[in-house]
Image (cartoon, rainbow, N blue to C red):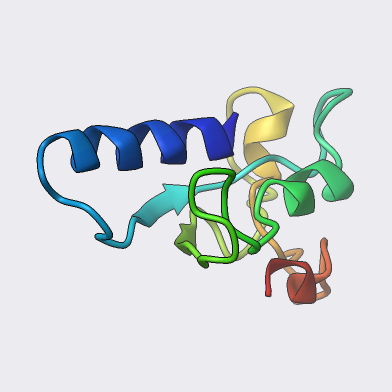
Amino acid sequence: MFDVMLDALAAAMEREGFKGIPVMVTETGWPTAGNNVATPDNAAARLHGIGTPKRPNQAVEVFLSDLFNENTKGGQEFENHFGIFQPDGSPVINVTSFT
């Protein structure tokens, strides 16, 4: 779905005369725990770095929503698990998955 949204934006920009402008995602993320689809593998798969069907091999600059998991945040359990590192600094996911 992430690629579909990026391609839809690119198509809309092209239709308005802005062809070839790079797209930057200013905040995204996927939880790594807290429910049955929140896994480190699913989080890493969201940002594969190889482009989209409309723009293959064109990297998309992405800023992740959280650097660290928040072990004291309230709300639903998955909301504590958007970081790529645990609060102690240990990795939750392989950050080289994003390159």
